[in-house]
Amino acid sequence: MSSTEPESLDAILQAENPPLQSVLGTPSFVQAVKTCHPQLNAYLLSDNIFPEVLNIALTDKAASLGYTAKMISNTMLFLTTNSNETQQKFSENPLFLNVIKSFPDTEYARQPKIAGNFQRILDSIVHRTNGQYLSNLPNISKFLIDNLNILAYSELWITLTTEFMLQFGVDLNLIKMFAQTVGGPNGFTAVASMKQMLKLKKDLFNLFDTVDVVEILLQEVIKPGNPLLLFKLFQVLEKINSVGKDPQVKATILSYGENFNFEEHTQDFIRASAISLFKVFPDEYINRLFDDHPFSSLNSAIIKAISSIGDKKLIELNTKYNLIDRILNNPISKTNPYVWSLAELLYVIPSLITPSFREFKIDIVDPHVLIRSGAFGGERPRDESSDYGDPPEHSAPFVSLDIEILSDSSSSDTSSDEENDIGGFENARFFAKLAGMDDLVEDLNEQQKQTQRSE
Image 1 (spheres, helix red, strand yellow):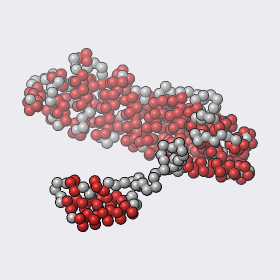
Image 2: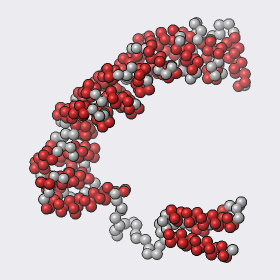
Image 3: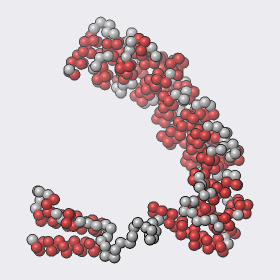
Image 4: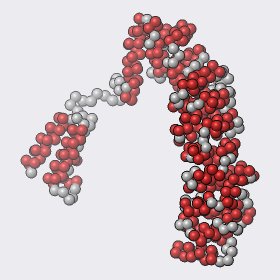
């Protein structure tokens, strides 16, 4: 049956004025598109058929005209073909260009399904022309920015800005225009797209790492608003701050810490993000480090901020909140590492070191930090309640090798007993040496000699 399918399509195409529905419904249509069937291409690109093809893909009239879902899918397969030859014909077709240029102004441009078709069609021809086709669409960037809430357009925006920076005209002005959408109704999608762009294209950091762009973002992040949007925006700014190299940008970011109102933002994860970025926090927040059930992200951000606020401010906080005495009298808790971190930061300041604090640091803090910083948090201490008792004095080492299995002469039907024995001992000796078990290596050598003598 499969051998007759191309003939069926050929027969339809050879008829006079074959209906488009018949062609799109042919079982062999998909294969014909993949093989760039010349008669099919000529038919679909003809002056009286190609307008209908574009109409099926970029309007919602297809169903009312009797085209099935399979026919619509086949139409999209043709318009997004991987054939360079066919895509070249699209790029040279004036009707195709006119439809693509005018589509953003149509009523269908905001319909998600039709928008998805447009995104796939444009994505295909841009890739097949190495981005050159974008020179025909000077207004496409503004259209995409204004409609980022539609998933198809946000994906297309990310693709064009990361894969075709030069052809798409990505410059500082475009990034500033894009950044300004953060304060609008499409702000969340804009920030999510921004984060993805910086992840995919490191070259974009040079455009984001500018005072003009960062200030636009900072003005939005200090405002009360959607917590999820703010959280993602803090992530973007944190990334720019950590990767960027412009000292003016870093100074600008720190300066906005004074404008962030911690009382207006009630979510601790937003406060933690602000502290991490701006390196400032309300003085009373230092009491959070002594909570029995600390919020890890917030306390971690406070500790990082303390390490950069300077000795003078830290001495002031110690005087104001009696930090060292509270550390000395704080019940030892393995689940709150922030008290230990605070002790380490305070101990760096010579004027704060008292005899009792020095003794506490040496006897309590240092051993705890040593265990915490060890592999897997240090070795588990053994005690009477442990499930793991000490091994018997003459027990075998933990890394054991079954010599009988490794030297089993029945492991292969194609090798001699002697070859298998030697191979088994060699395997055992290899792993014993690898494990540093010299005594076992000697035992293996002796047992091999005995085995050979007995044979």
